Length: 213
Image (cartoon, rainbow, N blue to C red):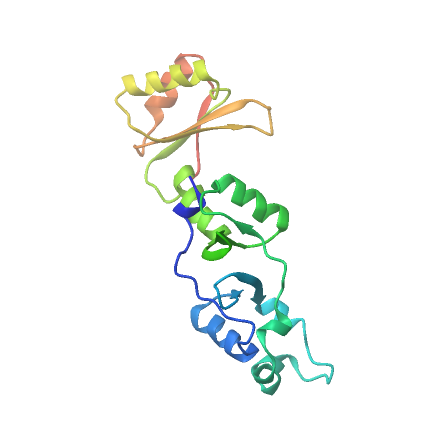
């Protein structure tokens, strides 16, 4: 899966000349925590966030709500924005985007193509559009873990056994266990009662159990 499959293409931006007050109002209206800052050609030049603004209190010691008052109306985004941007390209993989977000400890990435901002992808996008479907979060059915079943031959035998029982497999993946260091197979079944599946796998010599989703 690529970044272009996940990114938000209609991006709300501000410029360096936008007042801090206007930027805050835009964030509040759209429930955003940050906004990309672009130049007149649509090229990203920074990011402005509520956190960055809140950290720049005037030296006069005005109370914490200072940013909603005169100071914010007189100062521009260019004065408070963070010029460090973490960017990806539309054709970058989701894995690369996730790695960049994790190593940079940011919640959103600017998607840039030919130097221009064409979208934004967030860690929430990755969770809701990739992690949730992959893990079957919110899907009906039953999840069964088969210890050591994640190798090629074992996985083939396990799926064949489930097919013989006439039970549909909705989602399947393998994960290495931190407990026993074995490559376990996780099978999300399209049934609310997986006792026959567990029984059959036990008969075949596999250790399996139903787990909470």
